[in-house]
Length: 550
Image (cartoon, rainbow, N blue to C red; front, side):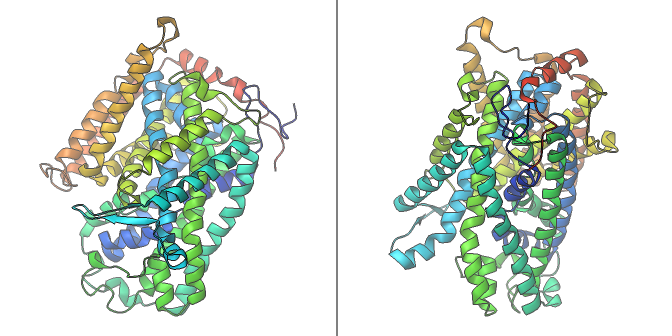
């Protein structure tokens, strides 16, 4: 069968080419994070936020390498939710899939809300009403007004229509947006560095690293550093709709990370160098801008770069909205995968005539509209989404190690060197990032995990016995001590916890605990024969892998 415009046996269409798949990940990596990340990280860590960006990049790049091998060896839609299913069975597969779906379905409306928040003052000056309003605290919250909710609904509906239109239209729309999203940060970097760059800013205020090592680590999890790098795995989510996915997925995953790291590190350097003298006179934690359009627009205006400020005003809407478009489709692919694995009703896996999981797309829209209700906005959800994502990244480290043992001879177009070292290191790093997010964030994540397990129980009990999915309890025995132990360590830690485990000690204990869980989990992996059968059960989605390239 020709791959060009081909429909697979499962109904999905391979309409996404190599560059389009790369742009799917790049468009997810460059979102609202670049607009706020430099300021937020600097407020936490001072100029040492530059170290946070480099350390965060190294950590996420390791995890991206792991995803590149998994995505290349088995290209199915919603792959991030499926690899743990193949390696450890249904209960682990559902648990990780649920967490990832929760993060991705939340991210689309959060990015949309960020776009609206940036546009609020502009709209008010033009038409006289606000899209956002403030609820006095404590805590003070900025939420959507009635007109803002209407605008958010229109944007989410637009994302939904584009996704329902088909993956080709989605990739074409995203490609145009991503060229803009790459160009604007690069223009801002060059313009700020050429116009104003003061090396003394890196030691101004209360010094280079006012919060020490702890501040550097906290900025990684809560300052938007990891959040900014999230999204490289989106190429895997759409892998079942790509031509020649074994080649394209590793290229897209690693390429997106390289683009993201270069842009974000240079943005931090440009941001610090362009600050006005005395900006940190009252301490880096109190660094702020009166310009409500965001820190980079404020810098541009202060330096007399009015043309750049206008571009940044526009991008403050386009970048988050573009990322929201991708995640609206990505979350639908995760629920599609959960349906294909038998965890949720089969109707979520039904495809339209255009090869799109239509009910999953519409359901993501409905959930997004609920997220827009009066809950904390962008800033409050960044750490939550970060923790949810790295929990899934941790599970992929285990999946890689398990599938290396279960399927040693399976073709791997991209084979990660030193995987036996990188996988456990990646697992430890992921758990440490959850720790750095702090107990005030982590408790919400663990409550969400419990809710997901309750929903699975309800789903199982509501089905006839013969239709229930085998949960593979034996292979999930490691998941319970892992999640409960992480929750306890977060509560006891120095990161917004009880400080029973002081800074440094909490990290060492978490690392040792993570390694113990890692090797225990590998001893509970599915038998090789079962893993092979489950991998092969998705063969109807893998037709046409050698097709042409757009």
